[in-house]
Amino acid sequence: MQDLSWWKHAVVYQIYPRSFQDSNDDGIGDLNGICNRLDYLVELGIDAIWISPIYPSPMADFGYDVADYCGIDPIFGTMEDFDRLLEEVHRRRLRLILDFVPNHTSDQHPWFVESRTSRENPKRDWYVWRDQPNNWQSHFGGSAWEFDKETAQYYLHEFLKEQPDLNWRNPAVKSAMFEALRFWLRKGVDGFRVDVMWLMIKDDQFRDNPPNPGYALGQGSRAQFLPVYDADRPEIHALVAEMRGVLEEFGDRVLIGEIYLPVPRLMDYYGQHLGGANLPFNFQLLQCAWTADELARTISGYMAALPDGAWPNWVLGNHDKSRIASRIGLLKARAAAILLLSLPGTLTIYNGEELGMQDVPIRPEEVQDPAEKRQPGIGMGRDPERTPMPWDSSPPGGFTSGIPWLPIGDVNLAVNVQSSKEEPDSMLSLYRRLLRLRREETALVWGRLTDVSSTNDVLQFLRSGTDERFVFVMNLAEERRQVVIGSGKIVASTSLRREGESVSGAIGLEPAEALIVKVGL
Ligand code: GLC
Image (cartoon, rainbow, N blue to C red):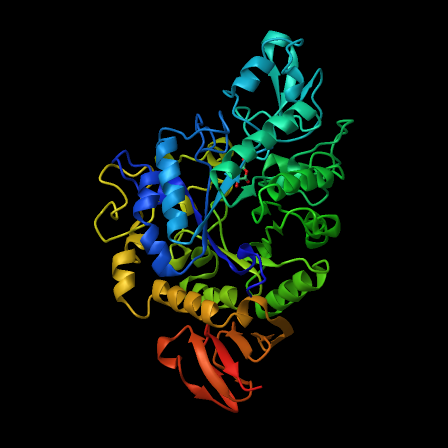
């Protein structure tokens, strides 16, 4: 363990800053709010926090439209607040990872304001301007091209028209953006989660995407075409390697890439000689069906595909996807927590997952997310998983004294931090025990993962360190199952009363029960 980089044995905790803790009663979370809750995170037992964007932004996409890469939006606080937060994070021996949004800026960014003034402007080529659009579609629906009357050309926006895409083929863009990275690295930030890394470079001939034969009505407009020419282009890997080089200038920092691609293509983002992203985000558990067969296939498929020496990572949820407790149900989400904490590599927990937070139903008049506003009613909205953290049982959940920007939701008030802390069998208590176990039993982090199997809806695998072995089992059948795993002691369980139990021979598992058993060598 000692020789592992800090991020290899880290559990990262994603904070969606608007929804974590408000400190000035405007109903929106902020940096001082995060600072006030750091001790909660220490008690939870995580190692690093990743904060979704906090830069100045018109908030068309809630911070993923950046107007200044080296500032702090007043909604979140000031640069002094940030510096204090970083200091407090480090004082507690935690790490701080920022979100970096390189694919696009806000249309209010001074670079774009200049770029759109004339075709001759020196910043013109910092963005992607064309006389004619092609068939590329925005991730938020509709054409990815916007006609700009002033200069009679179209600009590219893979997301909102308020988020014009940067032209990363222009060396000036590259060096300006790398300087922004250095600005934060110099302050001591421990790494970056890079937004939509696989989209940064597009086809230089702007070829049309081919039609998607699997397209069905009711899917977003982007699904009409296969993303052959506006995503995952071969040139991306040299660029990611250069970005990694910038982080390397500062020593042991981490580069995490947000990448939604099939596993073989995802693996390319580790780069030649592992010189790419340290961690191309592994979203397999966000996307696969929650059956023992599918999980066994997913886990062994991912592990087998890892390039030599590449470090695995796992994610159950984020601010763009329905919460795990809503996707698979609360009971199975407890088992999912044990599964996550049993897997090798770096783990990421999305804020609220540790409480068992669920998606909150959002009434049409409460909708905030542009993805829902642009393509309503087809499940594109991300507000349900972005609702505020419930810290106590009061109506605004201790999140704010003002009016929360999204509803707290009764379903989540019921699992608030205060009452969950007192309840030994709560999801929060389970997460705390699991995180403690992972710290004590480091073989769970770096030990070998073998013997992945699925039998009669029971998922099972083995983790082996130098001197320890752990068996993970999870029953996904609707009824009780028996498994034989040899003799040992239960060190983690979905039902608290089983922890510490000695087992040998056949053991029974209730539906949605999961266990980690430390077995003899
Ligand atoms: C990423 C972010 C998402 C955002 C999009 C555009 O997918 O996670 O929230 O809307 O990029 O920046």
